[in-house]
Structure formats: C-alpha cells, structure tokens
Image (cartoon, rainbow, N blue to C red; front, side):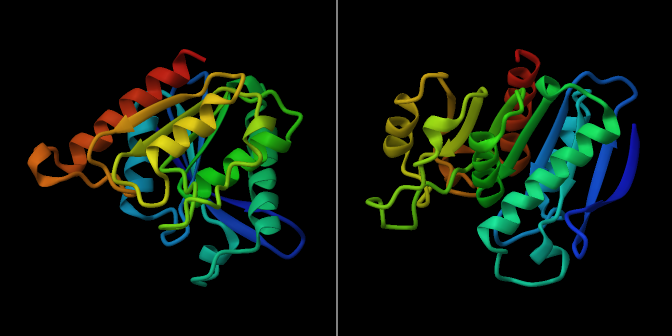
Length: 223
C-alpha cells in the first residue's frame, strides 16, 4: 500500500490537499469528500478512507477550499462544484483510468455535491455514493434538496440512518423511487446523521464502519 499527500489545483488561485491510498493492485478508484463541519482528517472520513483502500480500491480523500484555509463556513455552491470537477479531472489525468472505473462519494454535504456533479456531467461514472444525504434542514421537510436527482444517470448508493434529522427515510425513499436508474438505499437501523446508534443495539462505531465499508466495497465491485 502506497500513501501519498497530493496537492490538487482547483484554479489559478486555489489549491487543496488530498491523500491517496494506493493498493499494489486495483481496478477501481473511490474519491471521498467530507461533510460541512469536519475536514478530511475527521474520524469518519479517515476510517472510511483507510478501510476502503484495504479492499483493493485506490481511495482518495480531499479538503474543500474553506476547510483547507481553516474557515468554518462552507464555500459557495459554485466553489464546491468546481472543486469536485477539479479533483475528478486531476484523478483521471493522473491515473489514466476510465471514468467507468471511478466512483465518487461523500459524507453529508460532500455527498450532496457529488450528486450535483453526477447530475451535470457528461462522464460515464462508475457510481455515486452518499453517507447520510442532507435531504432537508432539521424540521423543514417541505424543502427538499432533490431537484437534481432525475438528471443523475450513473448507479447510486445511499446509506441513511433511521434517526437522521437531515434526511427522513420515508422522504428519501420517495425521492429515489422516482428515478429510472434504481438507486440502492441501505438503511442503518437506529443511526443518526453521523451513524451513531442507540445503545440498546449493542454496536460500537467500529462495527458500524466495518459494515459500511464492506457494503460499499461489494457494491463498487458489482458495478
């Protein structure tokens, strides 16, 4: 396993950090974006990054510009989308892999903007994966962030907790049921937006992460 710290240019003024875990032999690549409140060094992103690489998938995590510069407020949507575009272009050029072998993913906000990229690209991606989709603000279930879903043509995998206050399961199921590409929704029973479970379920965070990475790996290798 090779580990690299790689700087990726977003535009003439902005560059961001990324970390690459490259197995000795791989046929697929997974890019992981962080959520709004924590960067690529968060426990969730770091564990996902390392464990997916152990499944013989070249795994890359990166920071959005605001996190790179130590700011708390996320960048404007245009910057988030431009960053995704820059990272994907860089990865495709550096690895010379076919887009069909590339999977993009993210936690919460990072995953949301991965779906925005998937909805607006001409690339034939291998798939898009979201860990806790922020479908709506807490308590504001009348304002859903799903208007771009019908434009997504690549395979989709969602992980969503039953206690997620930013993505009510029934509303996400309804949103995905209208899509022609038959997305896969994996429900995490008792999980909140960070996939923390109720104590009575007797599952520690390591067990939850192991299940997420195993199901992600299986899905990627089926596509």
